[in-house]
Amino acid sequence: MLIYLSHFRGSLQVAPNPFLEKYLYENKNKIIMKRGLILIIIILGLIVISGCTQIPNLPKPGNLLGLSQKEKVITESKGLTIKFLENQPPLDEIIAGQNFKISIELINNDPEPVSGTIKLSDTPSDEFSSLQGKEEASFSLPPAEVLQEGAERISKSIPSQERITFGSYIYDESKAFKGMTTNFITEIITNHQSIATTQICVKSSSSQESKCQNKETITNFGPRGNLGPVKITRIEKTIVPDEGLVNLNLKITIKNTGKGKIDNEDQILNSFDIRILGESSLTCSRTDKLSLKEGERTVTCTADIGISEELFRQEVLEISYDYPYKIIETLGPIRVTKIEV
Image (tube, helix red, strand yellow):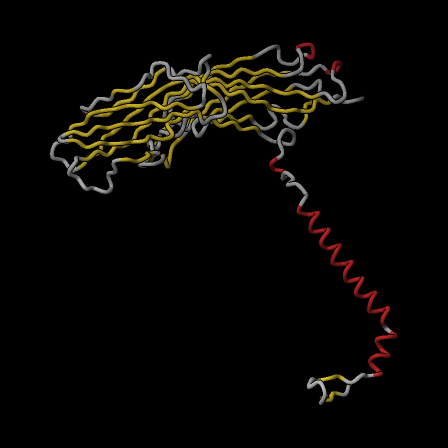
């Protein structure tokens, strides 16, 4: 390729190259085809990428509900755990004409006693010779033995345990049909006792102690305060220092955080007692019929606390309550298979 300077235009020019022009002319179709092929590959790649982003997230095998589970575990917060033992009942398939049992293991991790009943029924009607209506068994678990307890949690304990067995049962082989399934419905009704404790810091009007705040939200209620399904979730504290006194205002929120509900018509706690351990006394809004029908409630309390010449001090607040609680859980659907001979 020859390059020369043009005196007329003052610019760099490229001289025509006959060999290059001939090559481009002869291979023009091949070059166009290669460019087209590259463009098609790019378009197809974009379509594949776009399609992948639209595929919904599929559940992992371990997250599938119903069949292929070896056991079913129900937990009332962190206190009571209810576990159905493996193959009692079989959660994949029950063979019609064969006996089976339903065994439940109860584990109490709460340092408070838990008692109650378990009611068991299934979905096929009684004509299939399965469970006859609702079967019921009671249980009473002593408190878990606490071996090591810190300020925020119980780090070591020995839970109490009990096992309940229902059955044996059988599905009538002569009445089983293709595609038949069953579900087991469990009603777990427990009686809980709960105690939540926390420290409330108060200070005099002359105190500049920054760690003792006039307004704060408290969420730590001791290692025993979060084991039941109904919990104290927060306390909003406000203190107004005065000469020789502190006006203490508390907004205490209690919430149903479990899977079930309080087992009475209006979901009312049996008792709800709030007190400051010491000489000070609280005046609270009505607590004798405290209902959690809306899921949570807030109780307002006030107290006048003498502080004298102290800069600040910690008051201990204790909240105790008890309640019946119901969880309804379903195991299934489970296939009922008739063996053809």
